[in-house]
Length: 320
Image (cartoon, rainbow, N blue to C red):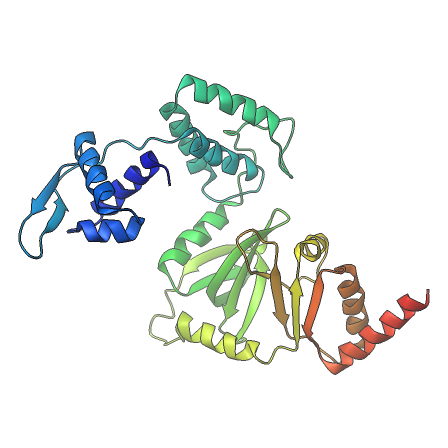
């Protein structure tokens, strides 16, 4: 970690503590005692007043009502923020209007040279889904359906929600929202059917906090997740996907399937689900899909009925 970056990080670290010691700074940032003392002196000179406390349990604390100095971004940090904005254009993201004001504030904080760099960067980099005829960072042509933000806001404060689909009310516990091929999906637990379901957000007519069910005791989200984890142990198809298999998965997959990524770069993932072994047509279609995923697919578990169809298809391919 560079010195300037370390000092900025230390400032924000100690500002959140009522009391801290030199030893804590040394351990947290893996620096020597002399370096920690020099950094604290520089922090005081920058304008963050510290109060030294003598005695056996002495240390430091930040003076009450002190205000942190303004944040200063490095050139690469600014580029990282702007590239993140660019990569998410035309993705129908929630809170897009806030992204617009955030970008405007960021541009107002940086120097003219840094602004010029970003203009060139904006002309140079394009990501999948970017409209080349209108690549402006501040363009809001890709606003999502308003109900998406409403759904997120309510999910932050309400454990259970009421959604309306085709004029029918459903009491649910929202589990996660995810975007796939510019379509937003809601994964939720349906209390009436006592099962996990998925629904496109576009098809949700309205969403409301649960009002008429206040007196009824529903299982908590923690219990629901425990139930789903128990059910997951009964799932009969376990797949592991590498980067190329994930790419194929994104091109086509049965709608009921969703991936759990195993690393932040989304180059490995697992899929665990329960399939109906009594539908022969579905088994054949599933086998074709498994071969479509390609070589970077590892099958950890599959039911015997599916395995028989899979081996038969493998023999047919080998005989060509």
